[in-house]
Length: 137
Image (tube, rainbow, N blue to C red; front, top):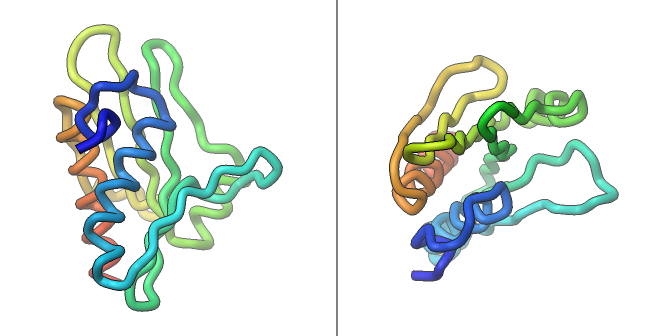
């Protein structure tokens, strides 16, 4: 385990993506798949993470809501998620209490997974939702 997956680093959007990507890589790469984090200051609208296995791809956009400040999708992000049938992953960082997450299908708004607790456990719920979607396609 790394400090990110154990939840020992500060919780921010980057550490959440890193932890989920690490879990997904451990599951998908041995089976011939790939996991990419798409982060580029010059390319707007591309979802944060993609996971590919057996020719199927799942895209996910991560957001971290802080106390008093909800992170919103940009118009480009909404358009990309709609076209790619992607997932919205909204982490919630409260002033007091556990980290929470809600994973939604962007097009339908259906909640695919939700959890609250220690960061490592919450990241595993997100990774499982992405993996479930990937295997269902």
